[in-house]
Length: 84
Image (cartoon, rainbow, N blue to C red; front, side, top):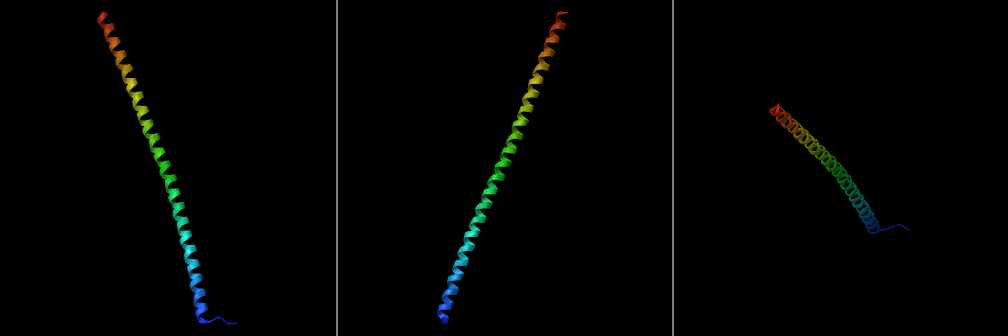
């Protein structure tokens, strides 16, 4: 039993539609995976920069505290010298 040309064309169109649907689904999966990886990398970079900023300000706070101690010590020494 041979298929008519119309039946063959119908099967070919059906196969092409199936292949196109599979390709579209695969493309969506790839897009979703890329979006997920992008968000993970973005989160990692944001966290990394946040830590750098925190370290920078902690260092600045320590510098300010050190300056305060030096200034306090200098003022105390000047007061002692005035007494002498």
